[in-house]
Amino acid sequence: MKGNRCLTGEQIQELKEILLQKKKEVMEDIKRGLEANAQAEREIGDIIDMSTDEFLRTFEMRIRDREAKYLKKIEKALQKIEDGTYGICEKCGACIGYERLKLRPVAELCIKCKLEQEKFERKFGEE
Image 1 (tube, rainbow, N blue to C red):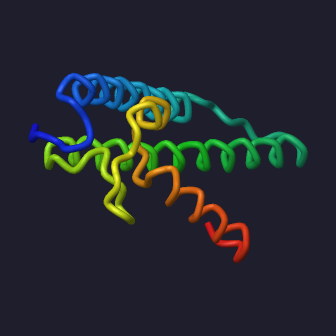
Image 2 (image 1 turned 30 degrees about the horizontal axis):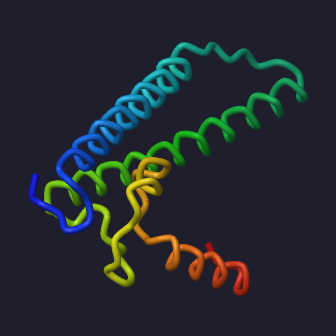
C-alpha cells in the first residue's frame, strides 16, 4: 500500500477495511443467491405460476448483475489503494473527501465532478 496525498495512513486503512467488509458481504450475497437458485425446485404450474417464476428469475439476475458491478468497483478501489491513487478524483485530480469515501468507498469522482456528471446525465438522459 503506497502513500497518498489525500488521505492519512489511518484513513486509508479504515477505508480499506470497509471495502474488504463490503467485498465479503457482496460475495456472500452472490453465493447465497446461487445456492438458492440451484436448490430451488421449480415445478411447472399454470401460466400465472410460470409468469411469476420468470419475473422472479429476471429480478434475481438483475440483482446478481448489480452485485457483480459493485464487486468490480470494490476491486478497483482496492487496487487504487495499492497504487496510491485511492481518494483522487479520476476526472480533475482533486482529493475526494474522507467523509464522502466513508459513505461511498467506491467513489471515483469528487463531489464537484459527480454533480457535473449527474447534471449532464439528466440533461442528456445517459447513464
